[in-house]
Length: 497
RNA sequence: GCUCCUGUCGUCUAGCCUGGCCUAGGACACCGCCCUUUCAAGGCGGCGACACGGGUUCAAAUCCCGUCAGGAGCGCCA
Image (cartoon, rainbow, N blue to C red; front, side, top):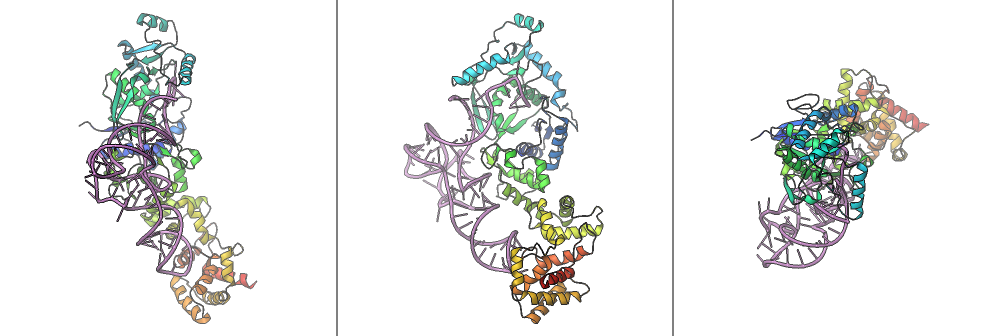
């Protein structure tokens, strides 16, 4: 058995898009489970649109997602170079060979001329197919014309009738009518290879065994197989993946919100969660479990079980998957992921001491379960850092108007002022006493206490809130955290006013 | 227009190949209940789909044909 070799071949003309990321992911998963080789090849022959910046960013995004490659532009390998722009002589050499064997021929038709023909066919309701005009030009004649400096593209000579079919790993047997496939251009008149040709040469020279790519390439496949055959190469196995769509069932694009993978990072989506979600878009595990790690996915994934129909990207489900992944993280890891978001929001100090980290881990543990994404944390943390009695919400104001409230808060204030070390245990004892003193209980008791401590009607459970606030009050932050005692006395003053 | 691909709850899907076990299963979302000082989380429950029409068969989500709908492709772009 030949060793499985697959490749992901993006062109560096923009940020890594989730659709492409999914293609990369399926390739990677297949390679890893088959104990094969995953190759990164950069298709940068479109000089106009390719940039070094995108090139670098692409690799960064792939690595962030957890995809590593065994061969590629930066890590090298035995089948390099891995950038198409550095392989031009290879394409040229193989084109020469095809020309020599008369399997390809120079075409002198001008782009304008071809455009006209295409338009005419379209108007007549026909599929545009190259007429084969330059096919019959004798070798002597065409060599002479080329020698005289006339611009020519190189076309592959293909059969003009019959059926070509291939077996697709996800779609089964696919058939195409050769009369609808004209002689494809191999090399453009400027000497650069056309995409469909470069891919074939690269896939063969890199010994690719399985081509796993988007459905938009299905119609390219017969042309590529024809090229493989002309070159005398065995074509690889093909697998065409369905597309990822937006909510309105059109191809996913920026209009649909976050689509670049680095955007998910900024939103606080874990790489493991995006990875997990993307695999679920078109594949389901045999036992129906959905929250899976990379290693589990490597074991369970089956390329043949991938769905043939397109899938709509559902951010809600991704968020849910993300929450499930966050839950499995140890506290200190959660704190590390949360850190940049809180730092940017100006809540954390320049210099984090070990005590700060310890506190952060505790605070994140308490608050993150209310979040789907780390980016939501700064807003959630405001319950610790902000204590704005003036901005109190309506519900909280209503609570203060209740008959028990003033009495409860006054009693609470008296007691907390006399205590050295306030913590949740002390709070528990106090609530009992307050209940006895005031005769208020249940909601009448807890609601005012909550408002006195948070200036809000809802939020974190007090058993988590109190320790985090008390310990936070002892640490240095850009915006200091007020202790519980201070909060209560401010509340009392606010009511009395 | 032509060619190709696809069509199961709002969404992702299981089941389809190898008809009966499907009164069509799971998950997200939504709704309700429980838990809880509130909200969330969690637990429990509910709503909700075989695109349509013909065949074949004792029996069809599953096989065949047609229709319709959505998507993709029709470049000297990738």
